[in-house]
Each structure stands twice: as structure tokens, then as C-alpha cells.
Image (cartoon, rainbow, N blue to C red; front, side):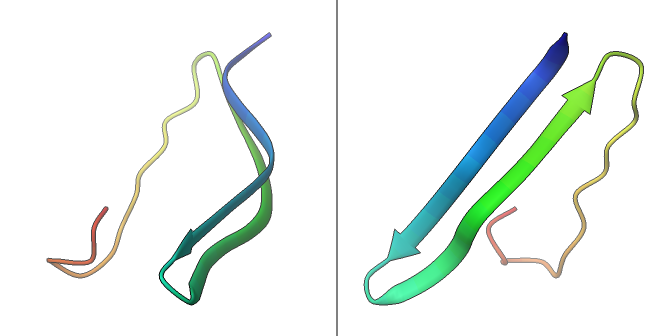
Length: 42
């Protein structure tokens, strides 16, 4: 069983599509890091 799972996630802000049909899962025991420039909205 996943701790976090998404299937078909889409996000649009204004007229800009940020994510389009994203699938992912974070399993118990996995280490996940989100990287990006400062101010990018992580």
C-alpha cells in the first residue's frame, strides 16, 4: 500500500497547464526530494 498515490493529476493556473496527467506513488521507506529554484512554488 502506498503512502501517497496519484493517478491522472492535472493542474492548470490561469491559462498555463502546470501538470498534465501525472501518475506517481511514494512507498513506505522511500526517500523523496523535491528540488527547484527559490520562489518556484515547491
